[in-house]
Length: 274
Image 1 (cartoon, one colour):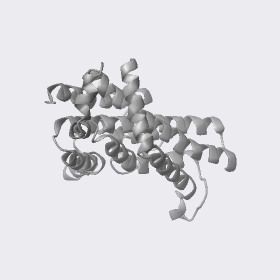
Image 2 (cartoon, one colour):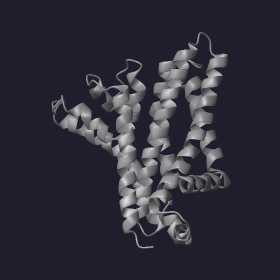
Image 3 (cartoon, rainbow, N blue to C red):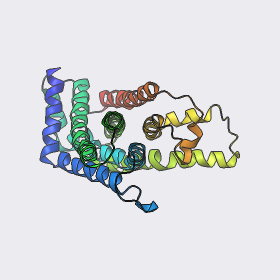
């Protein structure tokens, strides 16, 4: 466990040195504050409107930003160390490949968790202090669920970045595949499902179709942040309105999404020539 912690601490220090932690925190703070106070500007309203509107708006925007940040944070975790010649050096220490990967995951997740707590937490605190007629318990619960699901979503894409990084031989290829991964999960998957609905006039196995959303971690993230507000969402999420998803089940699905690519990354790392 000490070896994993030392690896995690190295990643955290690298994140501080490269200003990753500061940059992510500022992005999250600006995102959260902007959506909280200007999310309803299109309808002619400026200022805090409601907790559900704020969290759902944050989830809709965060689903684009959080995976991208996670992929950019971690795509060079393996191949970058290999190119720099430090991967072999690290493995000469009392540190096996499993500990290396877990340490990197904990380190990068720690960067995301601190940025999430400070960035989104500061916005929740501002709403609590300056918005009128706020139910503090509901605000705390909603933002806690949102921040936890945002962290898990980030961890999913960190693990996917490790899988990519363990496969390729060049950091530039890892960067390209990371962007393709973001594009596929954030944009192409939902568009494909919508196209399937259009082609079949909405009759494609309606009892099964909502569960296809579980094949995309970004949709799971959005469902988590819709389920507590009796909202059906928009776009492809409307098909999930009749499905009986539980909050605990959706969180379990996100955790499974972290474990699967992480396991594949570890398997590939054990086969990687160093």
